[in-house]
Image (cartoon, rainbow, N blue to C red; front, side):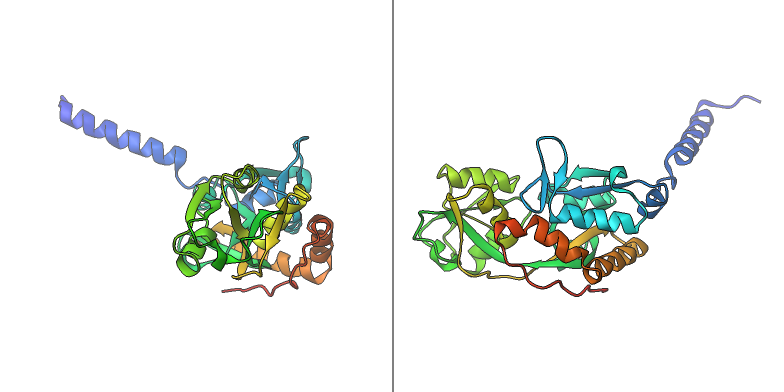
Length: 277
C-alpha cells in the first residue's frame, strides 16, 4: 500500500516531536540534585567592594561571597566546586528563570514585584538607601536637596533612583548605567552629581576611593537582602533559610561581616530574622 506525501509528512513530524521530547524534556537537574553531585552555580556581583568583587587574580571577595559559600557548604558543596557567575542587576531574574544559576547572593532586595518571578530566602541583611557624592560637595545633604535638575545615577533594573524622583525630587535627572562601578566613574569625573543605592554598597565604593567620596544624609529606605532562587523551588528555599539561620546563630555571619565590610567603617544593623513566607 502506497503512503501519500501528506501522511509521510505527518509521520515525520510526529517522529521529530518525539525525538525532541526525548532529548530535552524533563532531564534538567534541579539545584539540589546538582548540589548532591557536589557542584553549584551561584550568581554574585563582580564590582561591589566589600560585598561581591572579582579581584585581578580572578578570586572573589566580599560579604555576599562568604554568605554564598556558607550556604553552599550547608548544601554539601565545597568552596572549590562553586562556580561563581556574574549577575548584573537587570539580568538576575532571567538568570534564575533560565537555570543559568542555582541561587543569587547579590545585594538582591526583596520586593513584591520580584516575587512574581522568583522566590527569596532570607533576608540575610538589612540595608538602607543613601547617597554618595564627591567629598568637596556641600550642596547635597539628602534626597530633598537633589532638586534643581541635579543628575542622579543608579543602575538599570534597580529602584533607588526612581524612588528619589517619586518621593523627594521630581525634577532630578536620572542617569542609568549597567553597573554601579560605571556610576562611580561618572561621579568622579563630574558627569553626575550623586549616586544612590544601598548604604552598604556606597560605603564600599567610598572606601575604595579614600578622600574622594562620601556618604551624606541618613538612610531613607529599608532594603532587605534575600537570596534569589527559581520560582517554586520551595525545598531549596527552605534549606537556604536553614543555612542563613545557622550562619547567624553560630557567629559566622558576624565574623564574615567584620572581615569584609568592617574595614570600610560601615556600621551595620543587627542580623535580621528570616521570613519563611
